[in-house]
Length: 183
Image 1 (cartoon, rainbow, N blue to C red):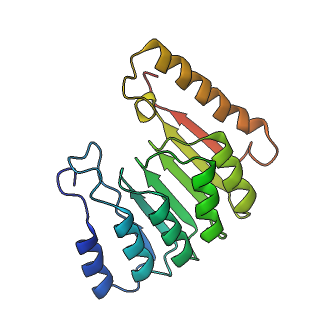
Image 2: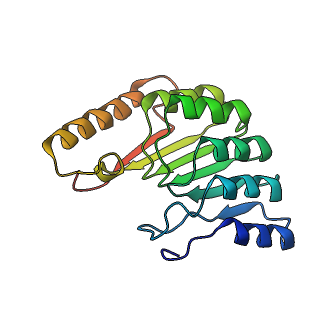
C-alpha cells in the first residue's frame, strides 16, 4: 500500500511459506509515505527465497545497485523485470547488474525510473533474449522542480536521446517509450 509498503519481514515470511512462486509484483504504490522501505535488503531476500522467479516487479527509492545485482545473481531464470520508481539506471548500474545475471531477460519495464540511453544500449547488448524494453517516464522522475524552463529543456533533450535509440539496429522493434502527459 502507499502507507505501508512491503518490507523485508513480509518477504521473509512469504518466502518461508511459499517457495514455489515464479511471478511476484511487490513494487510500492506511488506516491508512497515510506518510499525507501522496500530496499536492497528486500531485493536480496527475494533472490534467496525465490531463485526460480520468472517475472518480478519491484521498486522504490530504496532499491539500488547492490540489491539489483544480488537479485540478478540469484534469480538466473528471470524473464521479465519491472522497475518502478527506482533511482536512476545509468550505464554503470546496468553493467553491474548484467555482470551478475539477467542473461535470459526477455522484457525490461522501467516505470518512472530515470534511465540513460547508454544503460539501454548495455541491456540490449548483454541481454540477448530481450524482446521488449518499455520506458515510461515523466519530467518529475528526473527533476525536483519540473516546472522550471531548464528542467523542461533538459527533459526534452533526454527524451529525444531515448527516442533516437529507436533508429539503431535492434532497437526499432523492441524499444517502447511512453512520456507522461504534461511534459
